[in-house]
Image 1 (tube, one colour):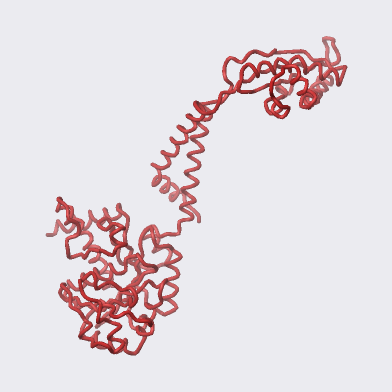
Image 2: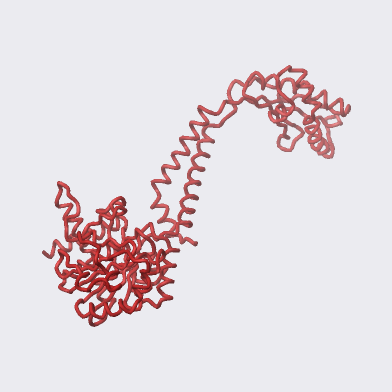
Length: 465
């Protein structure tokens, strides 16, 4: 996935609060760790000078170069076990040879003949004692190996009165930068790995299909959606003391379905009864909510609408209208009930439903049977619209059996929930069945997008009352 500069800036601005929090968290944590958790360390150092072989005032360049090269050899002498054993014997401190090697560093100073030995420990006394011992023993060890060596002390060891580490300011800045870098990496990884649909533009860009409806989410909590206690657009949505807010929410929700109804009319140009499949990739995307409220909205225009619950396994549209599910569609298709007995009127003018009926062991066969075709031939003479509420197509293939009877289908997806993989699978199945995919209904759109719709619809409607 490639990001444009604009997309990067938008993503950073979108997550700016998280970025700032992570930056300050890194700074604060690093400061606390450096100041109060990490134990202070103390460093004692001594500088030694390698004297060229010629003691006269005039020393040749070759002799100086030779002395500089010899320094490296001398440093190697000091990194031997023999040297550290002598330090152990001299100081009587309880450090192993490996510990002493880790505590000690030796380096050449600015490519000169001077080299420095430093000892760092958590005790100022120990660091000083060890460095002072090395100051005395290092020249002796080197001379014992190379008698011609001439070494003098340039800068003797000094007792370390202040800690040499940790560097609180440096560590705090590094911690802040690490926190900043970490959150940026996580943000971009999440964005790259996020396969869910983000918005209307995401759908259009990836599938070249129109989004016919955008349904807001702020009146409907996820818990209520799971329990299937959806609200109908013609009834009061939320009971609060502030009825103006309630009416505003009700208005924007109603207008969202009116917009879907209008777009559907422009998309589905056909004389006579229009038969529409409403499905979704997976359960919980909101297809039943869409089926019912779209049916109510169309019926409000005076068109006769029939909603058929084609989920013959787990259909529950009857619950929303307080209607018994038997007898229903499966009974009519099995010859156990007459069509007039399974067609139920609702409290909404011009809106009827056919519930699922008795649970059937072979729903797909019933939906694709000749009885279904005959039933629809009768129904399409009485209704202007027939809406098939079908099972999720990625779970059950029942909706594919109705493609041959329908004039088009709507795929309901949920913002920030439905994945691109599930959408692609659903579209592939309908395309293989030669279904006429009219477009998407984007359900549960995010709050700020809903507020924009709220402002547009409410103020536009208010100015034209």
